[in-house]
Image (tube, rainbow, N blue to C red; front, top):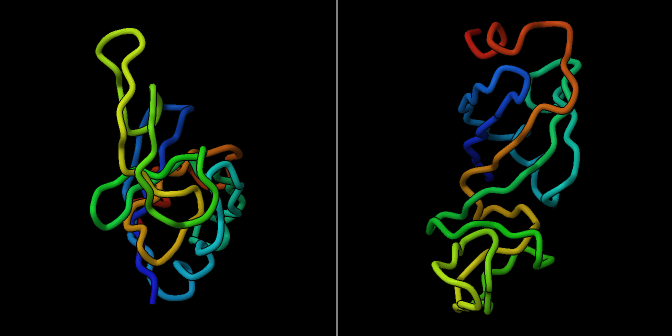
Length: 126
């Protein structure tokens, strides 16, 4: 059974909130990819629309949009998610996860695309 921590950022006010989902709500996220949109009704935010921005797996490795699928691989990187080069031309082999959400993902980062009827902070306090 899947269990995720959702980090939901609201670009309108710059706040981010954390929410844990399990069971049916969490299973609806499995198979989605970075960049996909998610209806807020599935996770308790009526009328909201979210975009999946990324996440990390159980070992702390970040998800990257460059790889399809849920697998973990070592890839040669010259920048981007998981690697910040300290000088020009620097490349390094880093372990990253693919862009698909699986049961091995523990944290999913979401961003608000469309706001629903209720205020974001009011829903989080309930």
